[in-house]
Image (cartoon, rainbow, N blue to C red; front, side, top):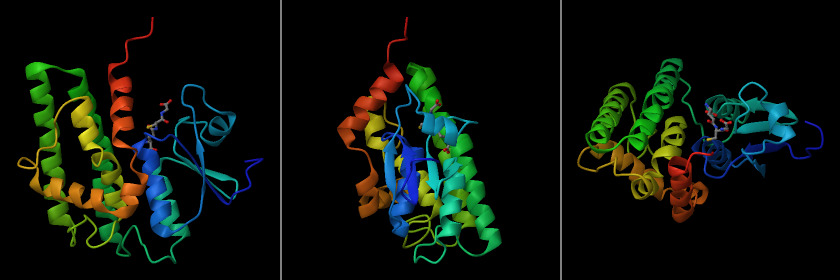
Length: 229
Ligand SMILES: N[C@@H](CCC(=O)N[C@@H](CS)C(=O)NCC(=O)O)C(=O)O
């Protein structure tokens, strides 16, 4: 894209877990990048040029060439900077396929189960939380069956592809609890909770997670904003 000097540019918004995935992957690999904060209420020409199909962040611009969709970007980063110590995906094609399967399950099943919790009340909310916890249970059982190393992180001793995808969303659970309601209870989801706790302690996760209070305020604004007249 014209006018951009840096080799690696990330277009993002600070509360977006999808964008945090890309930041975390770049930091894990030690790749320097320029960050551009996008205003989603007034999308920039740069964003519309770089992601004309979805018009969403994150977009990674590498040597002027844009790549959209967080999962696609993570794979690109892992493939292009494959000689760094941190590998996001393992070499074995079958394991890679399993990890991609669970990453898609997370984004296609678990993520959309959050909004019904926000939009409901009383018994209906209880049911939505139960449904969410059922999906988490399937996820945990699947990982336990399919992946060889899963402690303290899903990827073993270092953060991998799934940790990045899950952690950037789940590590904000306390902000969600404060802004909306409690969904993640240690007793109900011990394994999932232990992954999230380990991820939250990782120094790079601490570096990229938005400040708690700002996240609570953002969630309240996003979920409880009065409808525009
Ligand atoms: N599937 C996309 C989702 C990205 C996404 O939903 N981005 C939001 C910010 S969290 C966005 O740009 N929304 C702007 C819009 O919907 O117009 C990914 O994984 O990158």
